[in-house]
Length: 327
Image (cartoon, rainbow, N blue to C red; front, side):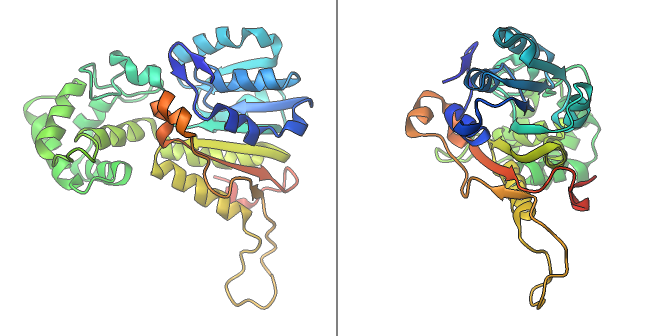
């Protein structure tokens, strides 16, 4: 299992198998790792595919420092960029890559980010309430809580945390910030414990979903995913594969629906006697159901327990992207 500095990449063998079929591993390949992180998945790809090049992207410059060292063995086969994966077309253009043979998106926050109190991702440690995947830009979670109106906050808690008491929590945030600004993870976690019902042994602790919702909002994670899926379709060569690892239902639902929409044979209205839409499928779904971690991996790496891997293959000629995939 690919491991770096205590961080273990999830579904390592399954991801490689879905991304690069064995018969293609001796070919010269161009692969984008949209969330290169500490380099676990990229290292496995580079070792298995001796002629592959990796374009690795990450928001977190500290992760790039580690991955640069971790992937140094591959020398000029590795190209690392600091930024968001929705900008993959710009980074590919910088390398004069007009198309790629595979794209991997490992969505969500990494274990080192969660475990570092200074980053402010976890309610379990009382660090600054930050939550930015790229700490050099954008507003912090504390700033969002302090400045967003009640309607916006309620929508964040409802849509990104699926919290039934979203309005109640939003009102409580407004009331508390008037008396004392939110500064630390403990400030917000205490409010969640006070306002939200206890879930008992079967459910997550009260702050878990509000913290998830805030993190998604701060980093525009779902918007980034949607933009990256569209960009991937424009970049993939014929037979190139797109693999996405998600960690909660909101992300997985977006990926599932995108794959289904791009794989449909026809978009004519039901009952239309002949096809008049002119649509051709853009993707062929490789994983009919999401791939999940084995029992052994779940035991050795708890983060893998909620991981879902979906894969699809580009089936249209590159450059024939449908208008629907554009911004």
